[in-house]
Length: 261
Image: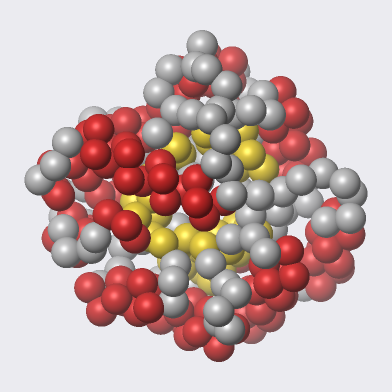
């Protein structure tokens, strides 16, 4: 089982990161780590270095961190591509209209730059689309020339939006929101083929039931898989098999990971 989106390097895990890591290893074969900004970069890379057969870092600037100086931040992140370190995805990027739209134009400019990186590096885009799904779809459509691939992280859109994402050749990340009774995600996901889905947690955010309101962690991927199996009328084993294969193919991680434990 693979968690395609987790921020285990953040400060909320400083008190017990080793235990969280151990619990994740008991459940998962890989955890992919999307970057947030320049400050998070060394923390993320330190975690990836601590267990390189398990943690896989990605490089990007989260839309909530787009401020006046974002062009300079993007320049510094672009230089990181030449550092010699391997990154497995571009992101977390995208648009967020929930918290603040002051820098909406800058968010769009940043997303276009991330799209260019994804093409140049042949890496998947990890897309944040809170209250902005249609605009993210439009910008990805604008840039799609057959080379773009990736994940619409924390998918909570409509059946029509799901169809558009599939037409773009992208996957949808399914996490704890699937378990929320009134989210509407289960109803939409019921009509989406497993070939278009991957599992994620977004740790430490959006924990699945019964942990809602608490800190999320990567080991809870198993709870998402259990709910997805219920929604799709299949087994957890089948959810694991298909979503793991989808994630491995997307990220180009096809070798067997180190044994758990």
